[in-house]
Length: 249
Image (tube, rainbow, N blue to C red; front, top):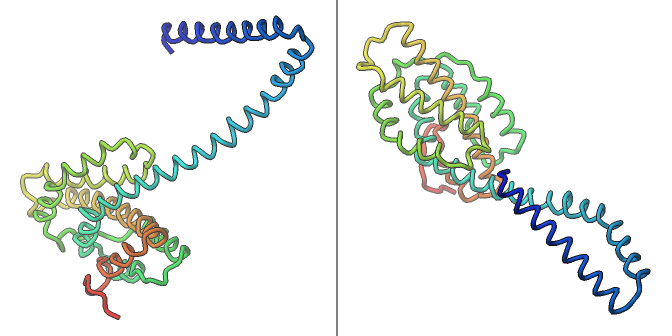
């Protein structure tokens, strides 16, 4: 707090105390009842701890809870934009490079009947996924071009001040951005040296694990709060044999 702010607060406090003293003096001058003044003065002071409890703890906590829910809603909107624009296509694009692709499809094949326990088990699987990555199974130049086109979009998401409250999603954005930077830094992505290829595979696996985990949390949120959006995810997610927006049955 600056010296000017402290001086202003001191003047404000002194002014409020002065006004209170003047009003009590006027009250005494009019009614000549010091007993009545001190009776209510002590009563008001005695109520102050309860007032602090009610206002400072109960009401403040309710306001904080409401602000937290509002922030979560805004964050989920940002996360939804990310998966619509980049996240879900990237999950599909990188899936062939995962040597455990068959198990990933089996564990993450969403169903309308999934409950919280199903999402939790899938989330645990995604976070612990340690399958080998084979970059020869995907077109690295196409992946590079795709990520380069989305670079500005990722940077704009990172500029969102609300993401400071969501460290896990911010880490995901940095991981994806790092993969893009690694691919862009290489003049050629053909005939990579074994050590260099292993390094890229590690970066891709890190990003993919985080993508899977955040996608599951986001889809779980949709199922609970936005079933019509969850319905579209069920028909279009990349962990099924065919994707189609058409509703059958």
